[in-house]
Length: 361
View: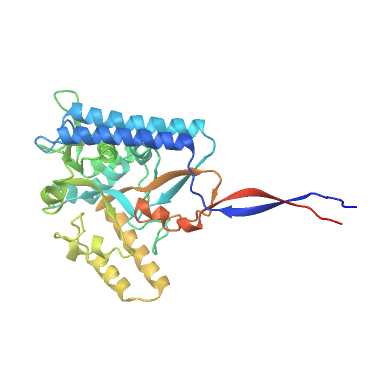
């Protein structure tokens, strides 16, 4: 007599992930369509063409509206689809405002630069220009890099302190003929031109900063430069009062802050020379002990935070969606967005597979 006994065992197996959620696919399709529209607009000159180093309000409005449409669609996907997990990866770059004290004499005063730092609402910039896709920073060395200094002096948003520092620096608060708040020292009006590259993230940020600085009486002009001209017309000749720009960094801050790098093609965009900083950075390069290098870099950042040759704003992050079942993603930091696929062979999804067999007696 044969007795058939069916025994089912559930085993977990790893299966390479090569599928994508349908709603995510629809969203990506939308992004492609909008990208095509943007490309057409650029090609026909509707947007992307500057006149007199600036873009018209209508051109900027079209571009911003399209970008905001993408963000709204992305949020809609997140809210409706609970099967998506979002990963945020840190990029090795920071966005900062670099001061050119050689072009604008007023910026040579440390108290004034400190006042400008206190006046900026970084959290609002993070919210409105990056949709929270970034982290507020206070120095030139980022988390995860040797020398990161979490206890560095922080210039937290404080308009009262900013106003006080300006007054102490000799800039008295007055009102012009149009009723606008200004700062004067004798007959000189405190006036700063804030320059950046044509990029939605940056153009939104400089508008916020303009409002912040004008709230304490600093007359602020904005200059938006096309991507094809920012290097040759602005960065290489160091043709700016204050430059909002992003720098891709390395583990060694020497190329960005040593005085030998002030002239182009050097990357010292603050055009700042400090003999103590030079000495510390040179000594750090000669050391092999990571702990000693770390101490040197912390000292270097303390000097930077004291004199404020630049205002550090944020470290952008790259966010990307995956199916919630996808496992094996371990990256936390990347150099470029494409790096998130470096270990794609480790990605997998867990599935349940049933095996059946019979036993004959």
